[in-house]
Length: 171
Image (cartoon, rainbow, N blue to C red):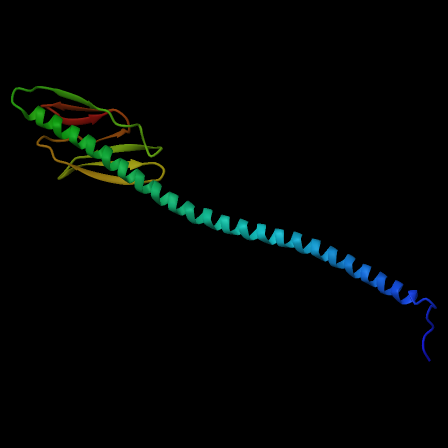
């Protein structure tokens, strides 16, 4: 037996049309979710990649800062060593009694403070140490007279030669 149909055949078309509309509604809703999900995934991947790059670059910047600090401390140490050696040569000249010179040094290197330690011995040396990052540079100093051990902070430094006490570095 066959199912009854409407005489004009509209019954089948109405049913098919309502199914087609319900399918199109679910498809448009799925497409909207797909777009939002794609956006969220793209944004998440971008955030992970940028975070990875920042972490990797942070280590690189830290290494470069240490190298810059070391280079600047080396330059400052060589300037001070040249000043000490100059005062030593002048003081060792006959007829000189007391010599004093000021060496202008920066109070900070690579954005950090530093200290200078004068180590007397064989050989004499200047030990420059920065605070952050902690970098130490040693610069040899050759003098004919004895060099008094001392410790000063970065900045202008006075070098004094006295025949009775030798060379002294002070701030």
